[in-house]
Length: 287
Image (cartoon, rainbow, N blue to C red; front, side):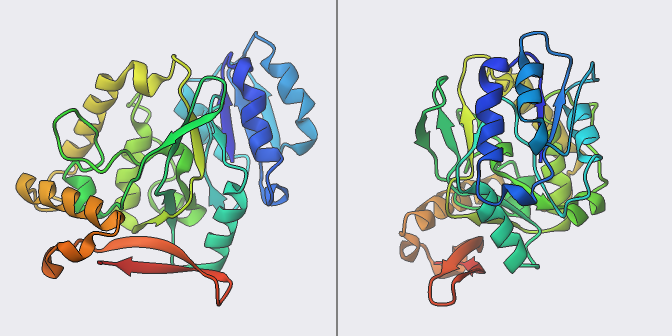
């Protein structure tokens, strides 16, 4: 697990403690990459140094360079990163560990219920992200606009994967993209493996007024569109079908799937918990 930071000392301790204090954290190689902060961040990092696999504070070549360098300091089998103004739900680490331990066929996961918090870090809302699949992704389903059909972004703080998937997809970020290198990584993951939805919140995105994804929303979307243009032809494009599938997925996610003609129901890759067996299961849902 990697956290990047640059002068976000007001939020850093909240972020770090959400990982270090979580059940399952003893199995986490936690790496903190600070870009040379001058606001007291280093003192916070030193406070938690006994819990860290590695930390450093020096100038880097941007966030994605720092994350990639951080990943190189660990060979842990499961991966993810958390920006220093965000945090994890208290159960997130143990949930991720259990799913990957129990379901070797599942290679990457994201939360069906991404959460947002106030500037003070208090959770204030969650959205439903019904499902994600290769066809929808490459037809633009996960680019949010004011007019286009979308089931929502694949949210970075809610997304985790196996190291072998990272390596198969190239083991790198496309650092020619200043904002949407995460989306470009999801594109390469989509070419390699199905994305499964987890039925509980995992990450908590803090809306603090300076979030890059919000402040530069249009530029982020523009980069995402460029990523999809690179992959034009991977799937057949059909804007009309995309609109239908988005509606159907949203209906299915709230229990209204039976109102959709069975032949038109998208198959949704979901994680569920079997109480009788006491373990997670991977399911293909089309109801």
